[in-house]
Image (cartoon, rainbow, N blue to C red; front, side):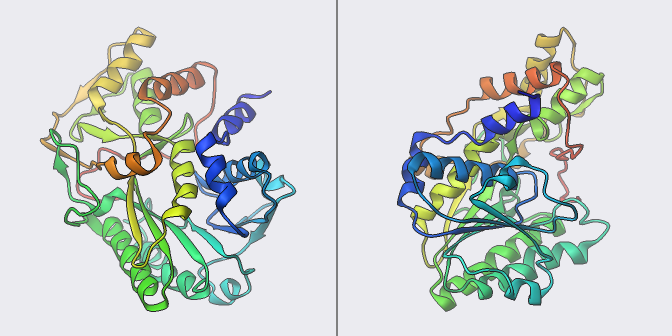
Length: 337
């Protein structure tokens, strides 16, 4: 089995808890924005969980597939891939009905160059989707960027902490939450909003960014001295299990893993490779953090530990595994993406 195929299998391996949860979920699922960094593995994860739960349902994967979808998850006979521009209301209207919607569409990088598109995707489109699927149930991805920078010595903000987004990207994601909440209350539409940061796997994410810098001997910016990380499979599993916790107004939950020191991550990779990491800047007293206590209570702690994540990323790089070439810019403190 190739490296990519092995990784895809890992990212689509359901936990017993997820299998039990999808066994209780009735009806087809439509995944909007299915071709992004997390979409293909979420589709694959749901397909495998359905098979293990012996559930027969259609999974509809929607994205702007500019070419024939190549990811193996989209070639599962249970999955129907549909190419659509979701900013075209007529194409949204033509999408098939489904009782369960996973909304994954958004834009972060490129906001500085094209803020209008960011606001269209993050603030305008959610209202279009909520109206189109006003008789459905929606799990929507949001972001921990809706919070202000938080003291590093704390556990991070909870779901009831003040929202003070920094920069246009973060402001547009708060707009997304507000628009979805409006339609949830107006139409009695059950929803969940998932404030995610940071999902990782060996081809992208904070751990991959730091590992690449260590290996290349490039200085690592310590100004954002701490981050939360969660294995992508674990984040996607929470998204699917969130269908069991929908509410009006929306159920809101922070989706993340342990708080880790950026310096410590770099030193872990450095010890493994016999390299002394180079650093620039100093750790600020605040960082972009999230408190996942509620998610841990409802879904259990993420099963993939930091030690395992570091090993998976390092082993992938050592084996010559590729990168998506999409750095997270996790050190950005002014919200400019």
